[in-house]
Image 1 (cartoon, rainbow over the protein chains, first blue to last red):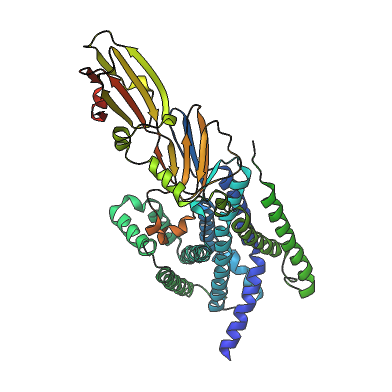
Image 2 (cartoon, each protein chain N blue to C red; image 1 turned 30 degrees about the vertical axis):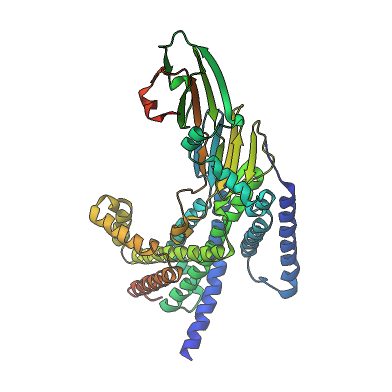
Length: 243
Length: 247
């Protein structure tokens, strides 16, 4: 009976969060549109070659910048969800920390799905734009995606964004408890690369995910990591006052 | 300046129109999203727009669709590969085809002991490999004949497809595996636009990524074919020494 009540509370909170934080998604949409336009106008790599009688120029375009900005946004969105102002919105409800975290978790999941789908599909807008707008002589179509690649690409993007936003959520949670921890983490992220031991750690952690070539194993790794980080984020909040 | 292909744009716009009309129609009928703010609806429309764009691109714009116009037989593909065959073999054992001839000149020799000097700068070559074939022949008395051949440049790539009309002065052929450019009498520019796969797929495509990422520029080699009287002393730049072959 208690379980059913918790589900109902979480559901109500989630719907309310969806309405109140919808501006986050529309902000992402705006960023993506800007970066899609930039992605069409500016090539990511250029190459020129030729001989005395002809020259060859190659410009390559990609949706990488859109995916990159979406990842940054997802981190910031994760942090914003833990901010005091975000919690105060829920004052109208009878909430406890657990239901609030679970509602946030659902919102992060939905946000990641939206962000992952839109970021990956922006590839097609950029590809269409490049094909149709420019006076292209030839198109190198190595970027053509098969249907299975589209689906796996969307899933991978969603998983990366989910992981990053949960990291943001965890750091935001730490910041609520102790700002010092957040500063240490930010300093380590920005300047830790210059310390060889920290750099080695980065490489090891990065390769744990990035060197995985099996999509199922990759998904399992990301989902387990995300779940662990989220549980840690929930336990961090326990020390805070109960509203 | 712009090379618009109107058909796919019109189809894309029609598809977007159908989707948006459908949303507006069913929204009221099924009360979908009635309680959500306008921003939410905008977000949903954005997702639908991207999905429709994906299908439109795959169905109407994707280069693999255009590719079929240029589909060639296995013989044609072999012909392209044939251009990139061993240059030495081509030069030493076969007559160089007339269509590859770029420049030809004849010089009177002052004496039998004339030293023929070959300078890399006089050939104005850049990027290409240069092969020099020297044939000593008794029939030439007091004369040197030099012919500069240039093999076709071949851009090999399974991904290359033509978009629109190519305004080139030179002869070219588009094949499924690449482009053959012959008779390079004028300077031409070729523009490729490549679409990279999103980087999130890289880790799962590692085995498929080869060095020929976008394609490869092959050929365009120059062959200097020199005929001199028997016993002529040949002097060449040090850089070119290894390139000289005597027939």
